[in-house]
Image (cartoon, rainbow, N blue to C red; front, side, top):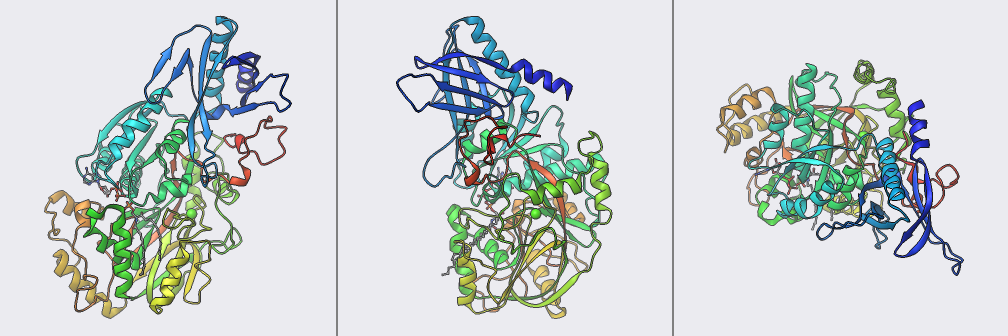
Length: 593
Ligand SMILES: CCCCCCCCCCCCC/C=C/[C@@H](O)[C@H](COP(=O)(O)O)NC(=O)CCCCCCCCCCCCCCC
Ligand SMILES: Nc1ncnc2c1ncn2[C@@H]1O[C@H](COP(=O)(O)OP(=O)(O)O)[C@@H](O)[C@H]1O
Ligand SMILES: [Ca+2]
């Protein structure tokens, strides 16, 4: 703390500077860099205040980076690059752009002093800024523009911020996951995926798996306490749904996401582990859905060529097929005193529910080194409590660890869910007529409450189990044996398109994650099948699970993203005052420890 105060005093600086030949009074305090035009004719002083935490880079001379980097090397000038909130309509300040101001000084000595002090201030206030990143690009995700997006929009910003990268353009599904599981990761501060939710999921599996390997934790044990991942994950959206990006940043925009990565924002995220018996099947963060969402995914895989539109087409087809499924759902409710999925709140940047969860999960986190042990202690009794059982016929059963908002549904699957509170929201939609179900679906597209319907239930939970009724169990075995060539006892003999021994071994131990497996024939075709199946499949963040009977547990804040959650538009005012004197809820002080 002592050293920090010293540093703050060191970086403080005040002088006159010129911006486009207009004289400004510039001041650098610990937290802000502010310049105010000194113009006697004007009564309204034109003032700009940039939080030091949002400075992207400070360069000598007059520098431009877009469309190409140019430097006019003069010894009295310097250029500051920073985060600028776009005022474009509808963006609510969530869309970020690179701001740039060129300053001229009366002398070279003063210029060098400004550069030095600004750089010191940035270093002091943003300890999580990455220096070296491992980047995976999925060239086939979304509209197949990931490579172009990274090289034209993101790489120049990383270079400006002094971030070095090791870029891998993937050549097959699961390459990113396997790299993270097996290769040397020394020196990397974080991993960035350029792609969609499927690509994020790969990186998530790699990062979690690697951390557990190194900690000696058994991922297959459904009761295991998983260790939080030390590597931060960044997402540059270039996929179809991009729900994880949307729900943690508020917009789908590669430049905004790149800037969050550069300034080292940090957003913890809950993760749900999915088990079948004593084997890990997958992890999920956005949508674990049985029934409608499972059927939509199966159908959509046949129409991948349509790109992101495949979900709308398949959604309509599955809706028209009007199916419902029986099953038994068991859930372990979360503490109702902490929050509720019907409390009409939104999880926003700096969310108090998630902050309280951080205190519970990491009680001694200020004491470095004790992070893991305190997390483990918390989880020793995390599955205590009374399970609730419901059984019947459902249109869909969904579990989400966060709101899962996306462009299709700006409020998301569960608008009041929290990113990092250690719980998930379980949505049960009982069998109903097509008009009612359409009403439910349609409400996802507006602010109308989709839970305020008599055939819908929502519960905030810590864990969930799902199993089939006796007759549907037999159906599942029959269909699985037909479609996936499964031996009695549940072992997979050969995948429909996937003969690799390694993959079979993975299936047997529960790590089932190949994209080829996504192409497994659905249990029934949506409209053309004569006899609809009694079982659906689970859609796990866009992957089809090869098991229907599963148990799930939410692991609070298991990973961290380079994001900050969604900033409340009411709180974003472009504050020109010092943080301490500002009496509004100033977002510009958000990166305070
Ligand atoms: C009538 C309009 C109904 C709109 C209903 C919108 C519900 C949207 C919920 C979205 C939750 C998204 C959760 C994210 C899941 C992703 O992890 C995952 C993978 O994403 P990736 O391919 O980018 O890697 N995405 C998905 O599984 C996609 C699920 C999308 C479901 C969309 C369903 C659209 C339904 C349209 C129904 C239309 C009925 C019309 C009747 C005439
Ligand atoms: N080079 C590749 N070839 C084929 N599939 C890949 C490749 N790289 C990644 N994948 C897989 O593609 C799937 C979809 O990727 P994603 O980037 O999420 O796009 P989308 O949002 O369009 O589904 C992911 O499950 C990922 O594992
Ligand atoms: Ca949560």
